[in-house]
Image (cartoon, rainbow over all chains, first blue to last red; front, side, top):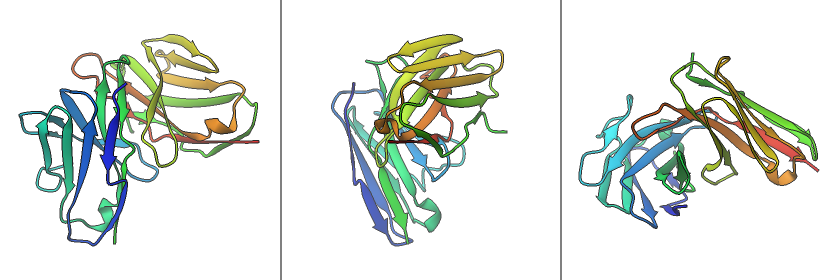
Length: 115
Length: 112
């Protein structure tokens, strides 16, 4: 299975600032996915990031708020911009794990608290 | 109505008990059904997947899918304290990248 390194693991940020989360995969992957996991809520897909093209955002998420970079086949970043307390959540990156049919491998997540 | 419904629990059981975790769904196009386990401060990890209806067994874990009732289950036999985690069901339609739709997870506590 792919191994994902995600950082930072946690952060406490002031409202109005931005945080960039990094996701490094130990193998080349076509698509990388960014999720948000709010307390008591299901994993919600924010966007899909393909190398060499603009990310595709799900309904309710916009590029100005969550810009994504995908400079190569092993790395991606998600920025949470102009943060408010409502952005406090766990953010996870994920890749499709071709070693396990229809399975997805996740990073350990970034626990973000906005104060 | 959400596409995938899952009782968040918590579900507390004694060690050795049989655990039953369940999800219901509304989208009849779902064909792939998965269970993920998520330990505290970790990302979800794939536990089991099933295609279409039927049962699948892996050690102490059994996954069941009843498409006619739009209901899936995960059974854990001889539960252990190390099984204490949040269990998320997920399901996806065929085609494309099979991006799954997740339930909100059931918190399981197995006490010694």
